[in-house]
Image (cartoon, rainbow, N blue to C red; front, side, top):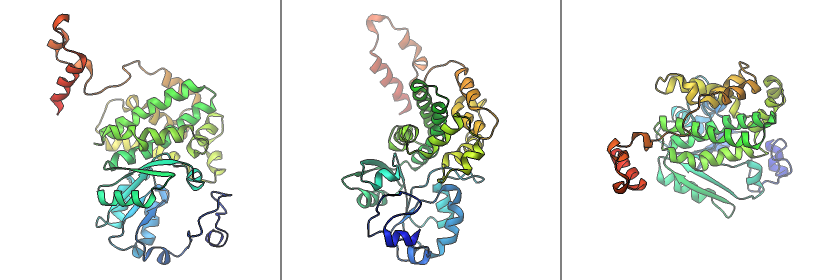
Length: 339
């Protein structure tokens, strides 16, 4: 692969038919690639990242910043990439996490793309903007590393679910409804981990989810479609040439929810899509049964938030019509309790 990239400026396995810039050079020697690097971009799938980092860390300078594009949760440790990188490369350097709807082929062929970079270092985030931004690639910044990572991990699981619905032939209404409810589960998880729920309304959350759930290039959506059409997961994995990270993430995410979040009665009712996909992938439920169970869940309010009108001061709700405050005033006064 390295020889083909250096001689022909093409990859024999990925992005076939796309000519890479002549300034791009490939090597299998970590010392040659990393020893004098100014920035390092880490794009190794999450499940292989720790072992890879252990094999190359002696070649990486102590303060060289790392820009990570890997998304997911590690099996066993239940760690996200922000944990893995610091555990293996230390906390002396700055890290940034690039996420958003960004299919490689579209980027490589110059199609317009917008992403977000999250970092605890404003300086590194701004450097990443300068490094990557161009006429066809726009980079926004965020300080919410946890929120961006949650979006990057869970969107793959939701994409598998969307693919299953499409494979079952249930129509556009069903897919749209499932993706919307999946985004709520993503937002609920992020909030439980201390993230700003608004982050999940951005590029790393709903943006990446929409691209992965509806884009024809999505590996996770394709995996779900094949499941919905009746193929067995072992056959799908055996014939896939690229990693669908949602498979491993789906299985470990349920364990993550059970162990990392506060104990909750019937957590599967709060995250029915995330739990349901894991059960389908592990063979404990068929795709069609999974959809039936989703449709038979208890009926309830669509969303919950701190400004639930049921929690408003009773004196406000019972005020005479003539003297009643406007809804905006009621909400403002209620929100001030949480300021």
